[in-house]
Image (cartoon, rainbow, N blue to C red; front, side, top):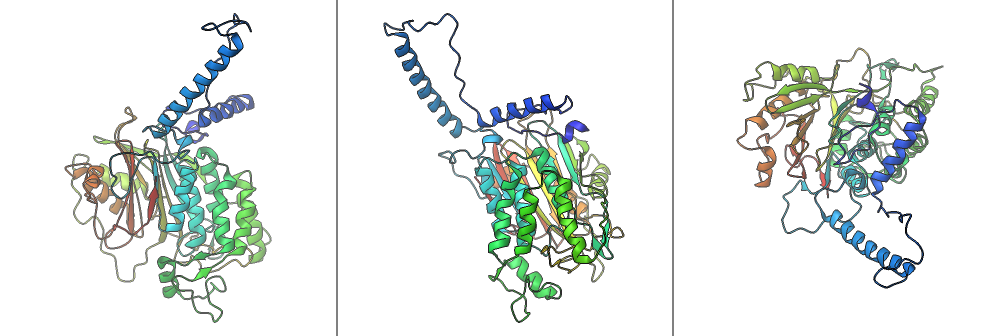
Length: 505
């Protein structure tokens, strides 16, 4: 279990996962080794002991011979470096260190050489893509995009939200679940926020870029302003502005509309402090201390901390399934799939009829993937639209109303299918859904539809189709994000098609 949550410098060609059980000296050695692998330095072989300053090569003095040899080595190294950047197997640690390679073949929408990200907001998808290009891995891109969504989509997620995650590391073959801990009340009707420590914990173990780098752009968006998109404008029009002014209101108290500019300088200040926090505990404590002052609390309960756990697994003829443990909907999903292990047809009526006015938890989802098969799926929720509707004036954070008596987390059900753990080149598929009280059934239906298809979904995408899971919506509500690694390319799509912007390179 420990190995599953230890820091990993994930790269396409590294198939082992280092442990950190031998003290500080081994940790330092591993960090030094990780830096060498990431930067991929040229190795200059030392001169042999028998070499002397006056040795000659081809009639030239030793100094001239060494100079000519060095120039030749430099020329060969540069040539190899260029070919490496253009090759199909660049490592995740150096992902995006050069421009995308020129190639004679065309790509369909959602297909990329190196990596991709899909999220509900174009600004956040772009931010994640920029981090991939800058050398980050899928964890860096996903965590930064989640922090971005915490700024621009306060109706579905934020620093007051709870996060679930599922990460498959193609280098080590391990799959790890991010769990938020049991929901707990901060105050009557207000959930204890766990977003910052959860994202910090995930990044501390699996990220590559420095933690402050991930908060730079979300902090700037909160400080300098962001544009209200269609999703936020629709939620504001339906919700009204009670408790949300002045953050999301005009001077006359009316809600901001599509295209309006919003700022959240208090949240920017919280993010700046979080960037300086070296541990998840301090990231949480910095926010809770200010929230306690806002709410008039003498002290805040520590509560359960987010954790990294081995993902649940289920062996199938097509490969290995990974999902998140309870209290998410992951166990329910596996039970649905185990009910008839030989059937590969979607069960009839996979989504139950909902009673009138049945409320669905409002959630936010995103997914990142690279061409080697590493996948990160994240799901977060404030429970209701805008959570409790109570804005903390000192932090700019909307607190959730997801408390201990709330229902278990049916909105959290990410799934990863790996064709074979014995074959690192096999296809990887990731699915994460939002917006339905029975999301496990929707994801199970999507997976079975994928497996029942005559061809793999990514092959359908090559032909310009959306794949066998394409439907107008997930049981008429919510969205489903699909990411895949196939033929050393990264693929992203959504159901319904076009609902979520994606970017990659």
